[in-house]
Length: 474
Image 1 (tube, rainbow, N blue to C red):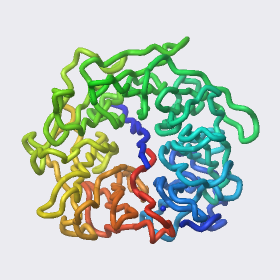
Image 2: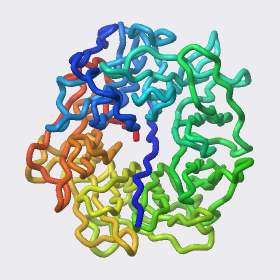
Image 3: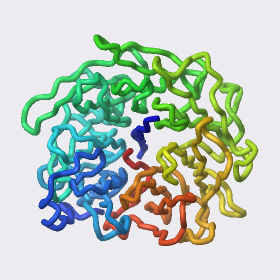
Image 4: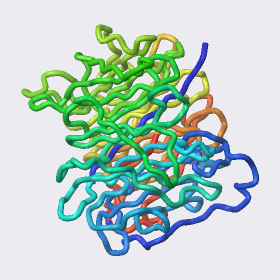
């Protein structure tokens, strides 16, 4: 049995940050060869967490946006071991402007094959001339001291005003040639940039087949052939659940397959049942309505299991919501269970687990305080056995559940301390009006609250409303 951890990108919508604030890492990190791990920006062998703050104020420009990288270590992460980078940082193209939303979309990968992971950052509201909200995407380069400098990806010449290009970004080897590629989405344009990338030369891009309005994208290997699939949720008028398409490399071209019975976004891909094929997890947080008869009150997730030809459109997916036996809580209008999903092996049993954010969960009188649910993988797929919910009122979790915190607005599972078990990074995008992330470590029995910590926007020198924790790169 072979095991793969296949990850995806999460996106965000929609602040005074000091220009050029960038905390360098110790020079000793350069003494060893870089790890080559996707998500290890300084090459020290520990994965890092890149967190968007798309509404951060930079040099007086509100909602210009920034990205914070928390560097992994044997003790996990802290507020001091970090890089804060934005469009006024040295070497980053462009300039911080009001409303750019730099950090709206995030995805990691080693684009230039130097052994250091790079980060693709979407600025979904970037203006071009007098055209507002056109959008853009920038590559920030990894190196011995972490992220620094960057290069803008070419913008399609036909981008429209308020097209929000860069809202969704994902990386992966989409044609099986060993190079990391990038896909970028927006309201009316979806582009594929093929690697390898260079820091100075041009980068070509092609238009993805007619997938319509696409604000999100998920990437991972659903077929076990070493080439990653790209999953695009296609917005449809009168159907908030939309349509789900995935693109597979056939050896000569990319073929598009629809999952006609699938609904929802965001998504994540990992091998939940340990059969060597990535499985697609889709969040469907929208309550059923006259326009959307499907789904479940309070939201749900579905799991579509991969295979040699990808997920079978005729399969009956696993469906889990808060009224499923064994799942904490209960489905209530507006819970938004499935607004965020993350994948990783929390307990080290070689099956990928799933965390689900429900940022609209009410806790007593605290409305929209938020909750994160942990579900475990097994040889029979995703199970509710041992499921557990975490809130800011859970014993050992720092902080207190308050109205509007939106704990679970974004979630990521990643092994930040290199112990072979994934840790949880959960965003509370509205905490105190500027945002926060919570860190819980993975153990053989699941997540532990021992050593748990909160890192607020102010602790990492972000100013303005920030929305820190609305997006976390995967």
